[in-house]
Amino acid sequence: MSYFKEPEHTHGKLSKTAVVLINLGTPDAPTTSAVRRYLKEFLWDRRIVEIPRVIWWLILHCVILPFRSKKSAEKYAAIWTNEGSPLLFHSKKQALLLQGYLGERGHEVHACFAMRYGTPSIPEVLTKLKNEGYERILILPAYPQYSATTTASNFDAVTSHYRQVRNLPELRFIKQYHDHPTYIHALKASVLQHWERNGRDEKLVMSFHGLPKAFLLRGDPYHCQCYKTARLLAEQLGLAQEDYVVSFQSRLGRAEWLQPYTSATVQKLAEQGSKRIAVICPGFIADCLETLEEIEMEVKQDFLNAGGQIFHYIPCLNESPEGLKALAEIAEQHLIGWPTMLTNGMREELKQQALQSRAAAKRLGAPH
Image (cartoon, rainbow, N blue to C red; front, side):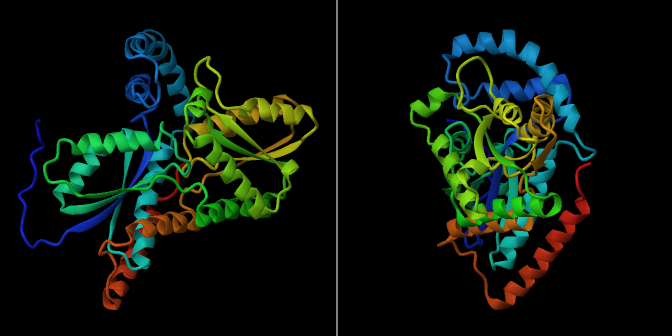
């Protein structure tokens, strides 16, 4: 076993706590070469593709990477901003603001973010935290609904990294929060804000990222959790069953995935006479390729081409106060038992730090 070189242990040194928000990842640039590197790492994960390795290696390197990389790079280019990838931009701001919200609640913690694929990588972030003396680590996935392809893959990456660490930190994982009241409330707030600005739509489409149907049959709970999120959100909004529909997007390959598919769903709605719909993606907490390009561009065009007239995409929670409050409360519940709460005197100092975090996030501006 080969271990990373670790900082020298100092007796009596106060240990610190960190919350690591982990999202899926993004290429470093909207170029064919950068996207190819990203897809190679992403699609080689055994949690993502369960095909035998020899067969999958041939498919990946001889079919997918040579042909898909350029097409995917064009999609990324369509949503790229002056600040870079929207997912990277939002993740950075979310971590900065999350630290501020936790500080206002009286917790002395450091919040940062990592990407499962791409940069900053999970090993890079965890190594940095180790070198800075963080001995308690809470892993907060950016996936409200649990799946082996996402949350469990985070677990694999984190534990794989720590196999090479001699002096391990205390470690906690948040598995899911698909039905957490504050998360549902944040989704509700985003829909109500949309209605206030634009009026109510005939249908609300709740689109979740898809999975191969075989994963559901093997025991992955993701499908059921998506429907529970949708049901709870509909109840909070007072929607009848005919007022909303659940669908699944981002199908890859020829195998059957979870249905109904989002593209086919919106086309069918238009063909049945719906002229105005809104789509929300409750499985994503930050806007990314799958929401900004696939939904706001491709699916919108599918709806309009089928006879629809008005299509609204409701943005992800991103840096909304309701969304950050939800993440802070979820993290806080999992911090219980760790010595992060401070005295009243230190609370005031943390409130000032929280204001500074918000000011720093505001200076980052918005992606454009």
